[in-house]
Length: 250
Image (spheres, rainbow, N blue to C red):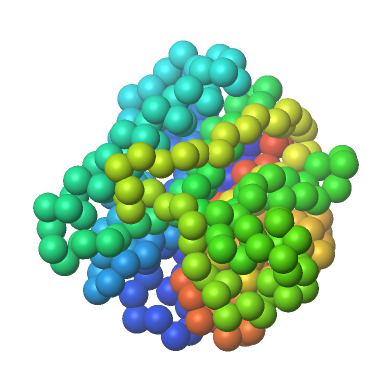
């Protein structure tokens, strides 16, 4: 496997409320995470950091995940646990009232990848079938598109584009989208916050992931493009490529 992750504050904001990382469990399997925090003051930073560090600790102690069902159960139970931690923290700390975060968490093995998703961060895959988004944005605008009330083109410039319908930490219970896909030699997964996906088109994402550069150069180029186009938001990404070369292992 090859893997890389990066986060950038962008060109406008003073604080980075995104958290990103790739971690190994006791069996050497990877968990990639992108969390995009939200909330007043520094509460978004608190929510995303707590999410990342809690899942990191839980993952590094885990082992024995051999099937897709086991991966799905692990992600669901642990993310529900994190949601409760965030919710309780927000309710007991006035400065964190209303805080929340998106979560994109992907377990990768040599047989499959399991994706857990809440919010408007995204997971894409590039494989022999092409480039596609694996997740569905939990936003007001995407719901309007899904129900045919506005077009996908209208959604790009809708004034309420950033209204999120589902996040971790904002309610006691959370619904998590989980799916498992086959993960094979040459496949590439991209996880990212909307600071990237709002600035770089799917066609451009695919083109950059397909080029011959190493993952480090690809990730730097993606962040550079997002900043060149305004960089109004924090920009975070994680890339995992199925490769047996060992280069860039995390």
